[in-house]
Length: 187
Image (cartoon, rainbow, N blue to C red; front, top):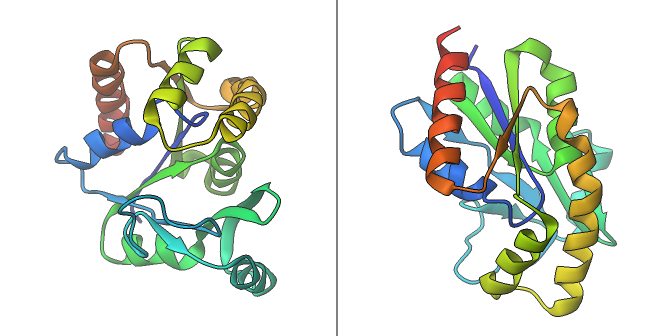
C-alpha cells in the first residue's frame, strides 16, 4: 500500500506552497483532492484544486459515508476527503499527500496510524499570518478576521502532529519538509 503524508496548518501558513513544492520532487506523491462546498476562487477548476459540491450534495455524501473525514468549517462551508480519492491514488501505486485543515489531519492520522505521517506547518506568529492573508487579497476583512480566530484555535493542535515545521523562512521550511517526507517514504 502507498504511504500517506498529511499536511495541516492554519490558512495562510504556507502549507499549500510546501505541498506544491513536494509534489514536484521525485517522491511518487499524488495530491489528494479535497471536496468542498465553497465556490471556486479565481481559476480553480473542479477535479483539479477541489471537487466542488453544493452543501446539499456534500450532506448526501456524508449520509452515504463516502468521506474519510469532513468538517463543517463555517455554516454550509464543508471540506472533506473522499474515500474514493485515496483508493484512486493507492490503487495506482502512488503515495498520497493531503493538504487539509487540522481537524481533518488529526482524523486521517487517527484512522491510518503509523501508515501516515502528519506534518503541521506553523506560521511565525498570528500577526504574520494576518499580514499574509491580507496580502493574498482573496478574502474580505470579515473573512480574514474569522480565519485569524480559527488559526489561534488551530495552533493548539500542533502537538498532536508527528512533526511541526516553523515556516518563518519558506526555503528552510521546504527543505525540512522534503527531508522529513523522504525519510518517512523510505521506511
